[in-house]
Amino acid sequence: MPTVLHQLPPYDFLPSLSPFCLKVHVALRLKGMAFTTRDTLFAKTVNPRGKLPYLVLDGEGHEDSSHILRVLDAKVRDGPKLFPGGGDVELLEDWADESLYWFGVYAKFEDPEGWQRLAPHFRRMFPAPLRLLGPTVGRRQTRAKLKAHGLTTRAPALVKAEFERHLDALEQRLDGRRFLTGDALTAADVGVSAMLAQLHPRVAPWWAARLDERKRLKALVEDVMRAAGVGVSAA
Ligand SMILES: N[C@@H](CCC(=O)N[C@@H](CS)C(=O)NCC(=O)O)C(=O)O
Image (cartoon, rainbow, N blue to C red; front, side):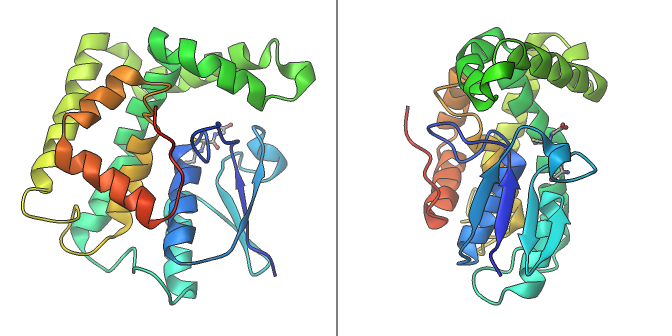
């Protein structure tokens, strides 16, 4: 039975607009699995709970990137054990989803420079009849989520400073370690790398440049993407 990853559409330089979908993409590749992708901006047409990624594996549908990685661990022998049972992996993987993720959303949909660069790509992801209004409505909905999350209730300088502190904390963790929790690649590395890879220089140059300044962290993101054979084309 074919394995199908339902995801938000790709750009011409990243496999998906959604870092959660990218995370599953990377995990499937690390596990050596053959799969196809189906792209949509309308998550509810695939998953009644309205979220992507949604993975169909052995005829069964699975939602939520963290859950999907656990399903892959349980079902697929090859590749790294993504959740080997350590507490730090659990915490970092969840922190990447629930905190780091939102900085990427902010960089693309709230930061004026990011939105100016994202908008033409985002527009092309909509079916032709929706290209005029779709991006504006999509941005409005995304900004409402950012506000509910709390990031946009702070001044931009505070958001950027907090982002840099997070990068510094990750960079420090990599002092003397190959991966974020030790010598083996885990879901923590996959999750953090997927969230940071969405800060591509072509859509979020300021944010990508801050990552470039943290050499160990930048190398980790590149290594994870390379190990997974996921194309992230350069600026
Ligand atoms: N916790 C979920 C989050 C998934 C999620 O928020 N996906 C977003 C795309 S980045 C989505 O499907 N948004 C569509 C919508 O909210 O309408 C996971 O890890 O998969």
